[in-house]
Image (cartoon, rainbow, N blue to C red):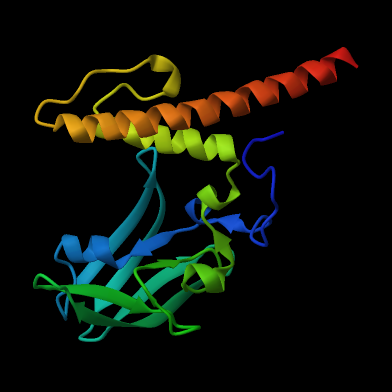
Length: 201
């Protein structure tokens, strides 16, 4: 019906989505300056301010040791994951995990099963990969609205130019926003037309 998962069916259509797993993002750990060798870190995942998972992390020179308990297995698990750094073009460095299963360099590991690994090894897809054309256009339009400091939601009308933004940038963003609205509205109209035909049968 044109919603999420409709239209062309890619090979990842039946996969679970990343947001239903427990993402461990090394960039967040680095931003909070937790990756000092010898550190013992307690990390939690929250949904609506409720703790849905927790893990203890021991920081080594070139690895993180993940210590956690799986309720389904009723056992404590200790998994060592190698890490490394790459230099940034403008100075500093970036931290990476090495996936324990495929050795890919990744920033995020997921834990839907017994052990943490990369998205590919976990068989996970991003929610955006299952979107229909209209849903994708709506999401992209909302990203532009956020950048323009407009009220969220494509039905809420346009706002003005944010203070400090160049007119050229504003007009480019608004033109892109309006084009995405047309795609989204056409998809909505198509869905409603399809529903009307179903109700008429």
